[in-house]
Image (cartoon, rainbow over all chains, first blue to last red):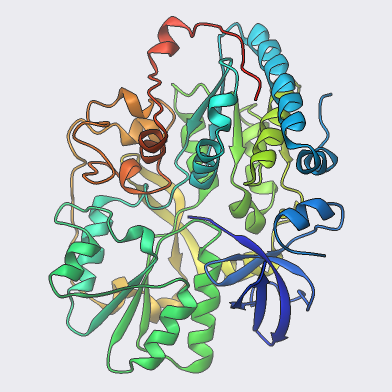
Length: 69
Length: 395
C-alpha cells in the first residue's frame, strides 16, 4: 500500500505541480516537499510527493526508472 | 565486508544476471556463516512491508534465495491490520444519511463481520474509491450537500498526506469533510514482535517509504535494545538483493545496527516537513491491530484543533463493534512471524483471494495472497525439524 513512484517535477505552482512519470504526466501535491524545485525527482505516494530522490550517484537507476536527472 | 551499495546497484542494471549471481553467492556464503554462529539451520528475516512481500515474490527472488535464508512477512500491510470491528464501523459510517465514503481501493473488499464496503456500496451506500486524500477533499468541495468521509488507513507514509489535506481543508474552509483515522505506526509493531517470547527474527528488512518519512532513528531501539539488525530497503529486485546481503553482513556483526540500502529515497533524518506536519496534527494513541491486539502508542488520534474533522466525533453513536476473528484463521500468528500461510487450515481451501477468510488473503499485498498467487507451500514444520540443505540454484 505504501507504493511510491519516482517522477520528475515539470512545473510547480505553490503546493501543486505537474510530475512526469516516464512520459505519463500527472498533477501531484508538493506540500510535503517544500524545497523541491522544477527538475527534481520526487517519490509520489497517493498523489503527494513524499521525498526528493537523490539519483545523482545512480544515473543508470534513473534511466531504468524512466526519469532522467 | 561484502557490500557495494549504490555502485553495486548500478552494476545490477548494467549486467543484471551477473550481479544477481554474484550477490546470491554472497548471500549464501553469509547466511551459512550466520547459521554456524547461531547453531540454527536458517537465518530468519522478516520483511515488514507488504510491498516488499510482493516484490520478493513477483521478481522470483524468494525462490532464488538459498535454503539457509527464510523470509517471514510481518505486519506491514495496513489493510491486513485493520480490524473487522473497524471495518464494521466504516460500513456503519457509509450507511449514515448524507454520507459519501471515500477510500483507497485496497480497503473495498476487506470483510468485517457484517460485510465489506463493496457490500455496503451494493446495498445503496455512496462509497467511492479515490487515488489521494486530496481528491476526497476536492469531492467534498464539489458536493457541498454531502458529508464526505475519507477512510484514513495507512502507515507513516500516508498519515502526513491526510495532515496536509486537513490543512488545505482549513485554508479553503471546506467543512463537509472528515477523516476516520485508522492509521498505524510501524516501530511500535516491531517492538511488539520483538517483545514476544517466541520471536526468532535474526534481522528486519525495513519499509522504504515509511522510512522516507520517519528516517532511521525511530528504529534504533530494534538494534540497541533487542540486538537485532535492520536494513531500510528499496523496492526494485536489485534493491532487495542488496538489502538481504547487507542485512546478512549485519547479522554477524557486533553490535547490531540499522542501515539504509535505499539511500536514494531515504535520508537518515526522513522528511522533516512531513514529520512536523504529523506532530502538529496527531497524537500517538493505542490502536488495535487485526488478529494481533492492542499495541500502545501505535495509532494516531487527531489533536484538539482538528477534532472537527474526526469522523468518529462528527457522527456520534458509532457502534462499539466487537467482531471476533474467523475461527481457525492464523493471520495473527502469520503477521507476527510465528506461522507461515500454508500452516493455516483455511489456506487455499476455504480461504482464497475470491473467498478470503482472513485479512492476509484479502489484501493484494498480504502474506497469504502472495503465497497463494505465487504457490509457496512452505510450512513452519521445518522450524521444528530443520530444513534440508540443498545446493542453491544460480539464476
